[in-house]
Image 1 (cartoon, rainbow, N blue to C red):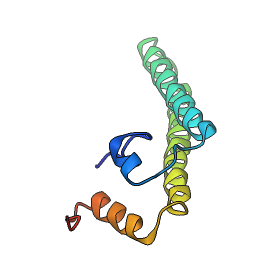
Image 2 (cartoon, helix red, strand yellow):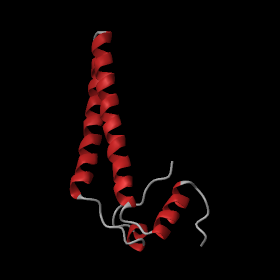
Image 3 (cartoon, rainbow, N blue to C red):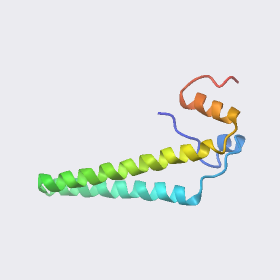
Length: 103
């Protein structure tokens, strides 16, 4: 899966894309941290032979955290669309879908 250009990178600067709002970046980082912590907790629970019902609750918690992180990512893409020109949108779609950029 292609990665997006980091804010402030050469690609982002060449497209004149502003940095994402700080709250969105912090939100994504915080969400990722919560996922990692929840995964460690699940590993420890499994190693300690926790009841399957407790393991299931933790797995469902991790799934909810991952779903929220996915939404943060998609929401960032949706908000970015409003900042791009038609040409920038075309280039972005070509890059994301692996098509030639026309350069």
